[in-house]
Amino acid sequence: YEVTMDALVSLCKRRGFIFQTSEIYGGINGFWDYGPLGVEMKRNIKACWWKSMTQLREDIVGLDSSIIMHPKVWEASGHVGNFKDPMLDCRETKGRYRADQIFVLKHNSDESALMFAYHENAPAPAEKKIKKIAKGEVSDYSEVALLDIPLEAYDKLVGPDTNEPGTLTEPRAFNLMFKTYVGPVEESSNVAYLRPETAQGIFAQFGNVLSTVRNKVPFGIAQIGKAFRNEINPRNYTFRSREFEQMELEFFIKPGTDAEQHEYWVNERLKWYEKVGLPEGRMHRDIHEGDALAHYASACTDIMYDFPFGTQELEGIAARGNFDLTQHQNTSGKKMEYRDEATGETYIPHVVEPSAGVDRIALALLCEAYREEWINKETGEIKTAEVGVRRAPEGHEARTVLRFAPCIAPYKVAVLPLVKNKEELVGKARELFEQLSKRWKVFYDQTGAIGRRYRRQDEIGTPLCVTVDFETIEDDNAVTVRDRDTMKQIRLPIDELEAYISNIVDF
Ligand code: ATP
Figure (cartoon, rainbow, N blue to C red):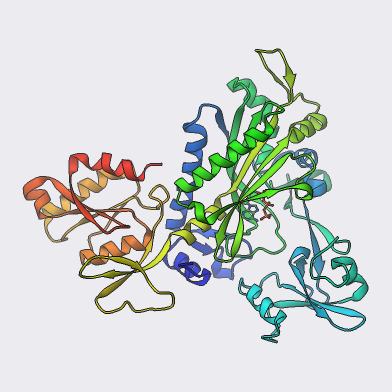
């Protein structure tokens, strides 16, 4: 990897991608804010998804449902009953841990076993530390919770003589939904939940959407929005947060076409990931089979990315049958059927659900884009810097660059007047800046040497720099356009500039 998580977290803070939420009060675990660059980038991710779903296709429409819905929605969906993680309490630290993140350290004696878990507030490297403790390489147990539990309980938890978590009988089930009250009275009849996924808003509005758009099956409803889960162990930076954003599609299909539609959507989504800058080599399919499948699902494939902290899920694509619509039909008493005008058949459609996390995609894109490079001053040749070597070798210059796909980059173009003390030149550059700003997010910068200004743009991932110089105003009405990745420059008439930029940066 080009980037360690420490370097990435530091860059994200320094450059204004991601901040700890309410940092001035010490933050709150599992919540993050996106700074000036982060918010642009995140909006671009969502825009690329939305365009691919609702603009480039005729068979998908959008929806924006509310975060708080009728609590019956969550009873019908099964979230009130089943949306739980197994949790253990540590007697020693009084901390709480997700049971699947508890590891066996050793049998302590004949009567008890020593186990360890991530402390809820432990920084990411705690995981590394645990491995070291397990190998006997360190004996500093801070940040790590130790659970000295009776052997009998241990056997029930993990099975005798094994390090693999087995049937979790001991831990308590912990519902991940955030609860609140609607109205001034805090009583059980007023309980409501912050949605733990956006999908149920789509199912609950299935009838209304169908009757307004009159689409024929197969058709889809897409939604982007916040979701909330009271995760027991938020970790890996923004990867597992308590407040996050989802992009979900419910694609309603004819029963019996589930397998082919599922395969189709896995491929579509992988193409999308490639287009936004996650290469095939770091993307994987994790195909769920047997017990790993929910009882109502006929197929589920997770789309995984090789993060610096391991291969982890970005998106789940599940063929959910008609479980959700049937549940809502049974609970609400409202019909959730579709009538096929051609055949006269009536049925509850099945559904394929690609469900992606915006924050996880943003994190993957940042990991993927980060590069430290050395540029040969004579030949302009670019090579990847050696890991851990701070200084570029003789005759080379170092640069940090975010090689975002242009559609994802926070700024698409930077407009740079060659000098700042020539009124005509600056005037032309400002004019160009205003023209381009009507279509894209553009950076204007007139301070410092031109080389240094290019570097600044490299560091925030701006794909194109447009320089206005003396020739522009005196001679050719053309500009110099510099490419972030190759650092090559071309001369382009201003008349052709918009078409050129659009070709590169638009999704
Ligand atoms: P995990 O197994 O990692 O908890 P999940 O399988 O429960 O995830 P889904 O319920 O399938 O996740 O949610 C769909 C998508 O929403 C995930 O692929 C992920 O991108 C995103 N997501 C889910 N939980 C979180 C979270 N706590 N923080 C950030 N994104 C999340």
